[in-house]
Length: 136
Image (cartoon, rainbow, N blue to C red):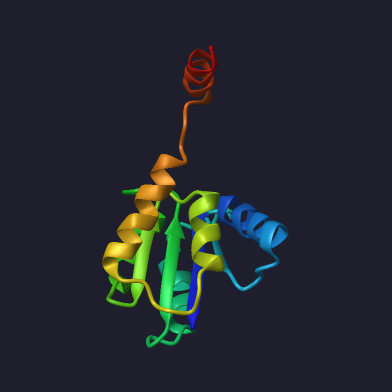
């Protein structure tokens, strides 16, 4: 089985999970929105509880918002052979993992997923101008 955890500062994670469900019907992502409540100063306990609910034999993808951010840092202790922590998530990356078959990913395949997600980030002004030049 594969678990998907989407975590972020404030409500970005909920929006990503809602969009994932809207586009694909996949409603199995676990969501952690940190620092929504002004009283929360450290999401460590909630993260530990969420990760504790998951079977360690299952493959888990944790998607977070920022490298070096406190949310990503709090997930680092849970990284492992079957738990992949990826920050800088984008919708195509989350979609690809959610819609992939049941076979676990190798570290090389995870690297390929991340590389593909990077290629999907495009400065459209330049891309459109280059496309127009090619069409002429």
